[in-house]
Amino acid sequence: MNTSRPVNVMLGLYVALVFAFVFAPIIFSMIFSFNSQRFPTIPLGDFSTEWYEKIFADPDVWEAALNSLIVSTSTALIATFLGFCTAYSDFRYNFRFKGPYLALILLPPTIPLIIMALAMLAWFSKIGMSGQLYSIVIAHSVLTAPFAMAVIRLRLNQMDPDLEAAAWNLGGSEWQTMRHVIIPFCKPAIASALFLTAAVSFDEFAVSWFVSGLNKTLPVVVLEIVQGNIDPQVNAIGTFVFLISMTLVVLAQVFFAGRQLKSIRP
Image 1: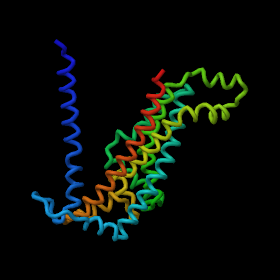
Image 2: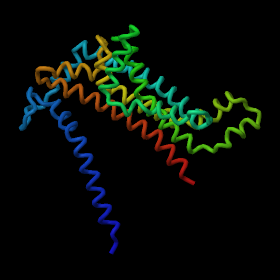
Image 3: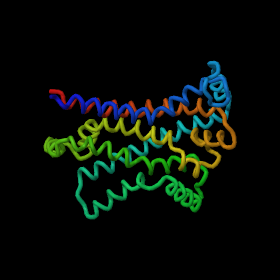
Image 4: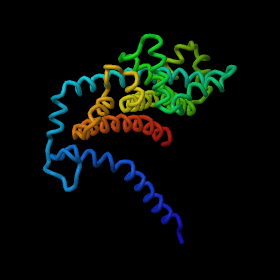
């Protein structure tokens, strides 16, 4: 008897249940965003785009969306640059205290977000940078750079260590080798890191809420809307945030996994 089929069926059911558990609340939120009734009750009311019309007409939502776009784009560029530099230094060099150095680089994602947010708020307040848009960018860059580093480091693991030496033997300087060998080889991972860090930054709430001041991002606006009342506008805003974030994550996966598949094919 072939036991692989039942095992595959059970694994498929398990994965389906996990996805249902994770995405069911989001799907219901998207459904209720088109519900004419104010309260999320079943049976649903009539189909309506009223809540989308309201958020499109709200200048505060547009301002928050612009802030989120600026923050996520800036964060993606800075975090990916830092992640690339860290990944390459780990790949290329051996130096004293390399272990603690890498542990320190990878530390931010392991710290609870509330603790990170409070620490960032205290630091920015001390140096007079609290409540600025660039404060959110700096905080998000610290938080997301390890993700970029991990993605790019995985790509560098696939490179032949002798490739750089071959470029040097052919007359290339270190900078020429970086430009014509290392960066082209890492392009899929760099693109993936850009999209991934942008998605994490666009979704991030806790740190943004503590350090944003009057420069609110979309997740911060959502919190303000739901405080003290139930407003279906949250479902409409949440739908947009979810779709944008998922698009960025999918693009990150496509760039990275697509290149992986090409390298496997004969």
